[in-house]
Length: 162
Image (cartoon, rainbow, N blue to C red):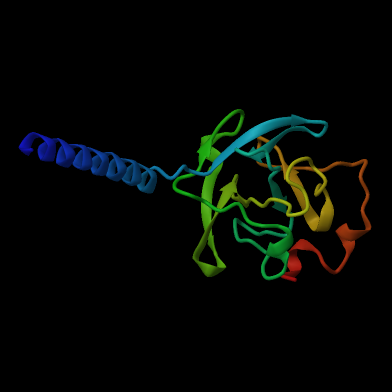
């Protein structure tokens, strides 16, 4: 009987230790935000680890986001989890962060705050919309000169705060 009790206690403790270890690892190993690259018809651009295209707002000044309020519902900021990491052709030396409203830390690249486009999981359909542009690996905007949009000159531009 004693052996059976000892065995049950040992199994229970082992299961508890395994579960605790797994929980501890997931709590401490939250993946850092990754900026990587993708080849498109516009050239090699920055994307998230899940392939979402990254944009900059032409009205941002010196790393300070101009997109606020309702603008952020259309152009969600790339939020930093841990220290941002570079992959592919993205340059780690160009990555940084900035604090925005609500205590959110937003990823920057070449001092440009980075955004995704809520209307598209992938692709470059946000290119040139409301002053937002796809970001090159050099950290500058890629302006698609063949695309003309009436919304890029509208009063709902990126710097209005919406």
